[in-house]
Length: 222
Ligand SMILES: Cc1cc2nc3c(=O)[nH]c(=O)nc-3n(C[C@H](O)[C@H](O)[C@H](O)COP(=O)(O)O)c2cc1C
Image (cartoon, rainbow, N blue to C red; front, side, top):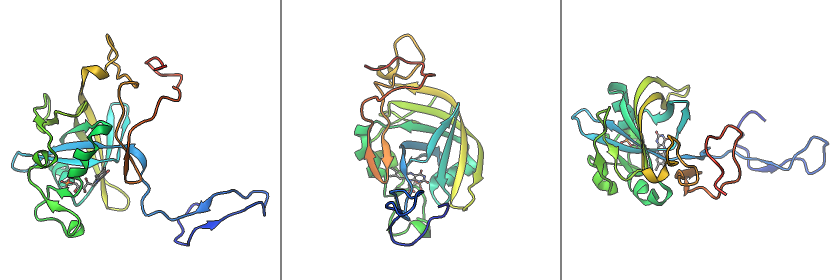
């Protein structure tokens, strides 16, 4: 099957055919299968900071690729000012993230967000988080986030559906809580760090380590 069918779930196979399987065909409204939550800071027109949760974020070497809804303040800012900070909260910080969830820095609230989102100028205060100056970019870091990546958007382009901007941001500087760093190295200790994972609109942390790839630069945790 290479298309999403709106038909109700159907059990396929059950041994009727040699190539049948035990999966059902579904048409889920969302496909957020579990990616880390980041808190993105960008600069508003008046020089203040906007702060928004995003889960469409992943690393390609020293580049972070982000999916940013075109209607929000973050997209508005990144089209004009390429500097940003990718702040990574810990799993315990999900309530602060969720406080930001119904907010937008866009005023007036765009039609597509009305009824679901409300305008908030000071997202840091709303979330109970503290801005901390960055070293190389204008938007501040989120002081409470254990990992903070200062970055600059090198390419911002529309996605195929026209709903999101795909932002490719080059990381300029990484700030880490020292408790996350393997002593005497530049490595983040995977046993000490856990992302906050957005799993079909529910928040999770990581479970215990299962194994590691042959290219791992850090030892096993147990
Ligand atoms: C956990 C979580 C993950 C989210 N992931 C994304 C995302 O990847 N991309 C996106 O555009 N919006 C995402 N959102 C929704 C935005 O945070 C929301 O649209 C917000 O209003 C954007 O703020 P802004 O308009 O000030 O930029 C997410 C929200 C939450 C709570």
